[in-house]
Image (cartoon, rainbow, N blue to C red; front, side):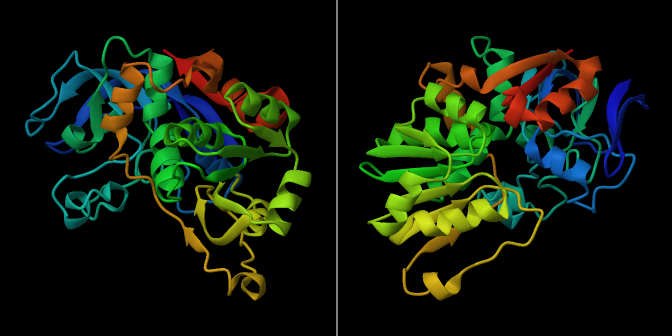
Length: 341
């Protein structure tokens, strides 16, 4: 088969590699119909995650068809259309029973495209397939279904839920990439008073306006007003940049929440000299994808308007071009880049 292989920092190529095979009885093999690129893939490419070994097939998001299932896979069979979760979950360990699937202690968690070969390929081996896939309803388009692998659960679980977004809140989202804008869309379900997005890219600020924010701006007056006034009830840090985190601490109100979504590859300064008395809660987290069934229901019945998050499509064999477009999203306008078989 063909797949996108990581060869070390700054080096990827679309190569011929062996087809995956069933290795454990709980595995399934899925033919990839749609996959996409995540910001964490770019961080791997930059060398920010040195634990990812050269030779690894990247990617952890896919929608496709089951072609083979191990003998201990009970809820899938060949021909089923499935959404492959970014998180693999055994379903039996203490962490999985507590729905913290991202912390699975039995060999799961974020392993696709990280510890084992991932989804940016024609076929992928999915461990713990019964607990790591979801059936795709026919009325959910492929390009929207792939957002349920990672982007939407991350925005909800690590951003909106961890930040305790509530009716009447002022919410600031720092970083208008795919996860930041998904956070806006889901936060709106909770009737906030105001949602503000901050980004350095005018193209991404325009995208934020299209998804319905109340203000979209470069770091400037709104943030200055918030930092000097009552502040935001919730700040969702989705940039993954040190300056974005510092800006979040300036914008949050006394007693407010900072929900850190961004994957930080560099040290971040925590200004406790100005925060120690503010009673601020800062949360971080690995997505669990336990919310995927709920989000899938919202999408299925038209209550989650996410089609605008997909801005670019490519055939699977143009993976390197897709990486180039996504890596320069602040100038190309690329948000979620989707690749089709």
